[in-house]
Image (cartoon, rainbow over all chains, first blue to last red; front, side, top):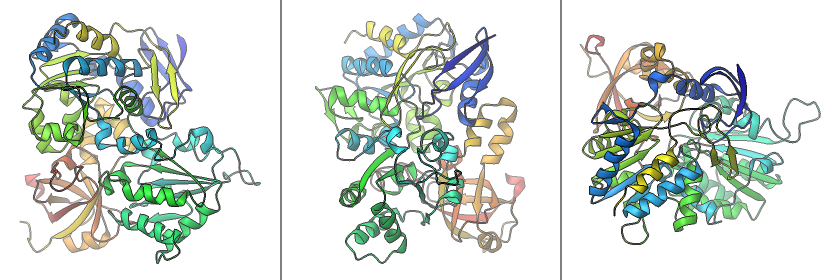
Length: 410
Length: 121
């Protein structure tokens, strides 16, 4: 039996203190991981759930699957690459190179997740900070998220309970913990103050905060929020999908609020990203093209909402889609699922999913961190490097994408 | 028979539950997991208006689709609202329509709820 340290790629916290015990390639023990992380690691230890290489549902060798995938991509008039949020930065670079070579559209989950916020942070129109700075903040405000379920170690390892200062009695961090939610979540039960809003009321609360800063708010919740932010040395907003969806991905008013709050105190935003390396995809694509997602390489570099996965699938634009480590057939509305069923799908994934089962070509891959080394960007923008924890015969995403690139004739 | 007068309209918000991740990864609990997630959490007032007890089956429907789920009492839930774990059942009730919004509606789903015959379930 051997013991190995690894970085958990179950979510964007990228906890770096996980220990696993292994016998050969079998995980026999997991230490320090949360419910979500330990389930993630156990899942990939089950060979029956791992994706083989398939062409038309028949098992084939890796090279045959790659040959078939390359043929489909070479024939495609409007290819698209989607996903890469579970891949390493190195694989994302290869994926972008492949999209550029193909003249393809490329997008990831961030176009219907936290991409707008990450783009604002990249462009420095939205202030942000790292978890290290969070430990010295005066107020932590969780808006539209419940880390108890989405990121179970967030509070203990990175934010509230990881705070640098505790009150004299020693059991409570010396920081205001607040949350804004439509439900009385576990986080709400320990938040002082908890601001409960009705679904969709977020915009009114933001306007209320703006009014309070200007001295004419009629909302007590908004006035209270401005009051404790004004008294805090640093206030950090952790933004969840509850806010993103309530604002329908339009953060204009939220940004205005941040700008006005910044005149009272230091403000930072950290997006509560789910996918382990979604922020890495955004950074990598931004560095290459100036955009975090929704890019088309058909004619130099184009960008716009028409290149989002939602719009592309809605309009049935791609005739062939390469999906890397994502399962859109499970997490999209049914009208889009029906359209996806009409496309030629190639999927690279470590596990069997609804999407691999609907794909013409499937390429089973190694799991980032557990089975392959590399690097990723944590939700707070910090780069995390990791080594392979257990050996595997499976190729990693980067190697598969590079093999595909070698076979592209366009 | 379903009494068509026992209907309520509520706004549903979807949410993630960490147990989804856990149970999803355990084959032996998959069926239990699927059943447990096929639920809507409602206020006591709305359950009373529907004339049902917590644990009864209801039909959620809107202009996009319909799905039978189990109604559960959520003590903190206000009247006129409901909560559902984010699963494939929610995908039946929403769609992507760029004329209406940039994102699919998963946070403010307006649905009609009515009691549902368990034998049809």
